[in-house]
Length: 160
Ligand code: ADP
Image (cartoon, helix red, strand yellow):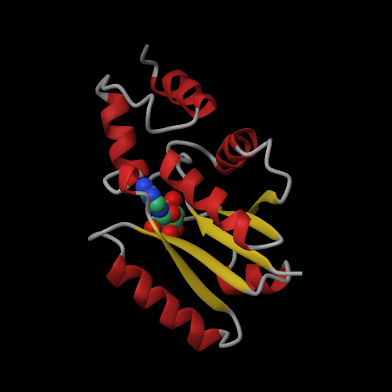
């Protein structure tokens, strides 16, 4: 059985993330979304909410599961028997950082492969941080996140 992990902060999950997960789930028998518990980032949503939002958003896809983790991604992948790490690549912003991370992970655990799916053209400009900024200022983000995330964002930010 081929199993892949799609790790990230997902604060919150966007349609860009969802697009990567749906495509990756077609390539592997099982996809585990790994929600990283303690990123060096200011979080809007605590881990349990980031997990719950993902679960709601992919509830109709049977071969995707969502778990949180608080260790090295390569360790998490080993614990759940995943052979592959999946990441999304946006046009200009992601390549260097992802390349560095993939090489580091390869150093730690050579048998684990990293694969990268090109971000959908529609979501190239989309990041969770920009999304939160726009939403906070009352901009429309309804085409950028799943409906459950839109609802949670509005409630969290106290905007209509
Ligand atoms: P991290 O803190 O690990 O970078 P993110 O939640 O920001 O976590 O992103 C998780 C993964 O999703 C990364 O591989 C990132 O490049 C990818 N990603 C982020 N935004 C998009 C998008 N709009 N389209 C496709 N992939 C994306």
